[in-house]
Length: 311
Image (cartoon, rainbow, N blue to C red; front, side, top):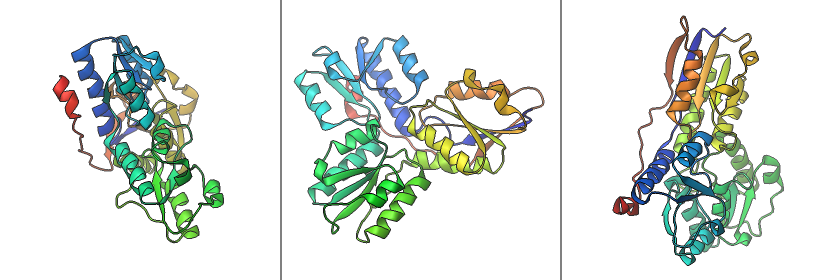
């Protein structure tokens, strides 16, 4: 029987997700439907479903989009070929790529142009990784997903090496791979600022603090959300029974057996309404609710100027 709930802070929507969702809202208001979005605007099924109800069409291939249409590119970033194809099809496009992902794209191009070989830590086939890898020649970059791969990687040269990473990864897992690469290749460098998103870092710090207080954790997020999956993994490594749920209907009563103190957090693409539904599921007479703030987060990203100009 749950007697107390700790609610992690920060949780839910990050600055990049808020920006992406607002871009869709503004473009939808200006141009109406049909409005196309390449890939899920953010990795949350509820957010996508809500936009679909308003007439937004989510696609994976620009060939599905009629020439001259209005389209938005997702927060995860896109390969250069997508922009080229959009121009050929005379699409009016708006880019909702998170500025922190854009930063990694620019780093990849900068260092590759300066003859560096790039170790890119990321998840195969994740759209963010796909976009970054497409920015440079395949001969100048390799994707590393595990410590085992880091042990085996054999770069073409060892004089000019750099480590970049997907923004939504686990800090702990990334540091394990990074430390191994540094040990194997003493000359390898990293950018002045970490590639791991500050929101991802903050939510992982918060879930670790949550784990100190509770005996069960629920991470709210869609299965395809990398940062939500990493939150679950971080919590499990802290020794706490943890489940990832996309919505309240997925909660199983047997999970709660033997637990009295529950921790709740949410991935960076989860809207408040989903978090509130899970909290309200447990918030009954006699159950106390405490917000546990690990890091104060108060950052926002400006919208692209073309969105302002179109509004």
